[in-house]
Image (cartoon, rainbow over all chains, first blue to last red):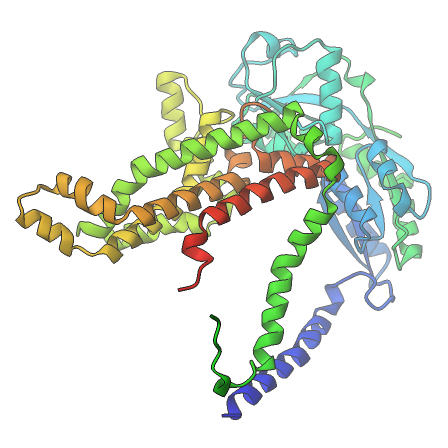
Amino acid sequence: MKILPSRALTGLSLLALALPLAACGGGDDGAPSADGDGTTITVLAAASLTGTFTDLAKQFEDDHPGVTVKLAFDSSATLAQQALDGAPADVLATADEATMDSAADALAADPQVFATNTMVLVTPADNPAQITDFGDLDTGGATFVACVDTAPCGKVAAALFQDNDLTAKPASLEVDVKAVLAKVTSDEADAGFVYRTDAVAAGEDVRSVDIPHAEDEVTTYPIAPLDQSRASGLAGEFVDLVLSTEGQQVLADAGFGKP
Amino acid sequence: MRETPRTLGRPPIALVVPGALAAALLVVPLVTLVLDTPWGSFLDELRTPAVRDALWITALASTITVVVCVVLGTPLAWLLARVDFPGRTVLRAAVAVPLVLPPVVAGVALVTALGRNGLIGSVLRDTTGLTLPYTTTAVVIAHTFVSMPFYVLSVEGALRASGEQYDVVAATLGADRWTTFRRVTLPLAMPGLMAGAILAWARSLGEFGATITFAGNYPGTTQTMPSLIYQALQSDPEVARTLSMILLVVSVAILAALRNRWLTTP
């Protein structure tokens, strides 16, 4: 009668022993500040920084042997919220200053603007709705998409709708700019509002059409180290790299404007 | 009423502790959601146009989804339960796949079939000029895709449980198969039909991934409550909690409707 429960208990205690061990095994690539040795830093960056920050992270790792840079790309609002909620991260880079300000309580230093971006209209390479001019959106009955206006890319798009007195409505409001680009490259939309850098990254897959007044709605990208960072030295150095001539060149190559 | 035989002794701690942990995991987040909901602005939130639109699209889509499930799913369940045709086992397995499919994958799959350049979608577009994405119809299709398996499996189970012997009796009394289906099979399977319809409706209410991938997200045409909650999370978590609360209330109401089947133990 007593054998079964005690066996189960043994099993449980073995499990209880094994769990922390398993956690230890994965410690090398786990939370950045698990042991406070600061060999891993985590950078939260807006989705539109995917290409450039991946390059910059590699460069940072080359410059700092033994250091690993983990990158998390998402919509700026989501990342700012995560930073505020104490996510184990060291640096935050967003696609607009308002979002960065919303995370002010989690910042270890004043944010610094490191890049700017403007919007363009992209169409699929074969341009099914034959959009050659921004005005064609209103006359051609084209299906176009933009970001939802809670995301920075949507705020800019909404401002551009207004600046240009656009009467046509988008078919869908996507959660971030990558989703907008995906709708265009997969030919599920005739046109989409994306950043110039996204159009550069998409290369041959899309054609760009200039948006009038785009230069009036410039997006600025701020970066700042986070309070919860346990490797604040490295976090500061990563920010420095992004602001350095080297870092600025990587950003310029991807189509970003100067701060 | 609840007589536990004393001879069995106290429940073993090895069962009580994990059981309590499981219960806490399921219950605590719901309690904190209720506590964190800004009740002061709850009614005002309900009245904003965005919420009204999303509630309307969600109610409309889930209702039509249930109707489509009943009209198309009942015959499918009957075929699976009563007709021996080649490939029946394979078909039954295929029908169950959307149950376990990640919703985003369901959305991607729907795009490849019914998107503007999908296999069927492109033919539809070339012949009629119609495109499905970004329409409320697309929302209903996405919801039906993910909800139908719940309905079909529930009804098929009921049909199998009620057995074929009543059908046989009806046949010996001279009823043809259609009459038997209407007058004998269907009434016997009615509880399974109801449970399946409620399950499908609940699944449709919460549907998010397939909808936002296939149908998009625009207020008034394709934005459902879960899409709106996801969007609100990016700007105003308080609004997101209020909207989540609305869906929680509806879900609990559904569970109450199901209480005779699930909440009372045999």
